[in-house]
Amino acid sequence: MSKIKILGLFVAAVFFLSVAMLLSGVTIWSGDDPMQVLLNDPVAAELMAYVEAADEVRENPSPTAKLAHYQEWKERFQKVIADNPRSQFVGDAKDHLLSLYNGLGEYDKSQTMLQVMISETRDPRKKLQLQNELGTISRVRHRDSQNQSDIQKAQEAFAQANEIFLSLSSEERDDRIVGMQVVNLYTAAMAAREANDHARSVTLFRSARELFLSSTKIGEYATSMGYSLEPIANQEMVQWIRVKEETNALECLKVLSELPSPRWSPSHYALNYATLWYVNDTKGFQGFVSKWLSENAFDDETPILMARLGFSYFDDGLYDKALPIYETLRDKHREDFQKLEPKAFQQGNDGHYERVLFDLAKIYAQRGDVSKAANTKTELTTLLPQSSLAEILTGSVFSSEETWTLPERPRYLALRISLAVVGLALILLALYLLWTREKE
Image (tube, rainbow, N blue to C red; front, side, top):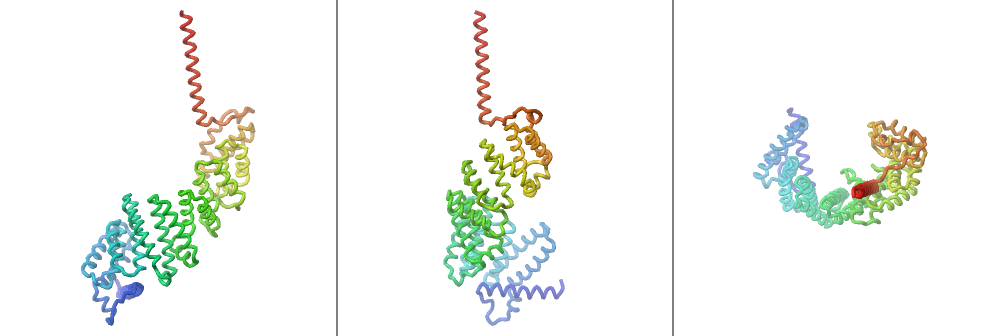
């Protein structure tokens, strides 16, 4: 390595460590030459060596090289921290060691180390950060272990973090800290959801949403961390449905439907809401979706919502209501489906449009519209040649004037088969009695 690069690394390390200590409120030196302090401190020397080693791993990011790097520096940081507990750079070394534990999946060590670090720090903002990190690590560990004690630790850590946040003065609650709290509340809510504590989860999601909306800068900071309003409001809506709170769930749906640049369209969230809320209530589902379609503007996924309404009508035998929806989708929105479901059209089967054409052909056949039924089947086999549903559309209805009837619903079919068996048994019994009487 050139002298220029070594000097650059040294200067960068001095700047990094100086800023880190300044932000933490710790005085690094008192009258001593800062360069001399760095040269004489073994922990600082290891930190600078680590910066160089990390650069080399980034140039050779193979799994083997990365694992060897993690193992080596885990052991080196453990030793230098144990040998120099009073170094002014121990905090930074511990932060790196914590990252190495996490990278190696040694979450038990991360938990133990975080608990020690939390007990040692007196800075409330640093304690807040560590408590939330403990919650996150415990939640990650729970995913691997499925041990309820880990998710319990996560919830306890997040609860303590929230108490610390609420205790901060207004001066300590800058936009960065509050924006970070939005992320922490969301993560805490997810942990509660994974513990099936839906009442706690929905409270945390709502707090995260309200905090996000309390300031433009706070929202921007949370978004920069990868946590936008959309997933927060969506998760909150689902949890309100879980706890059977219709008004609050609809409030979240309203928030989602008014987002300026959503990832998913309002119709997507309306369908999600209706499917979850009216899970065993087809009439309620139909009424909600019909009202939504009449009151809200057309968006990218409106055809999907319309199709699902048509399916619901069809499954309930309300063919007169399903028919105009299906015809509208076929006549005006075929290209929309091709954009929404490109994989289905590439594979030649599956998707909402396949079901639309299939049901439409069956309705025409049931009504005796033979030519329309045949034309719809042709469209289905042309657009989706691999469709397994098209194979069901066979019979004389497509070649004569006979009226084709819809297949029996399973519940009636089973009953009629049973009755037929009983009837056959009775006939056989009657024949047997006649035969025995003639012998007499």
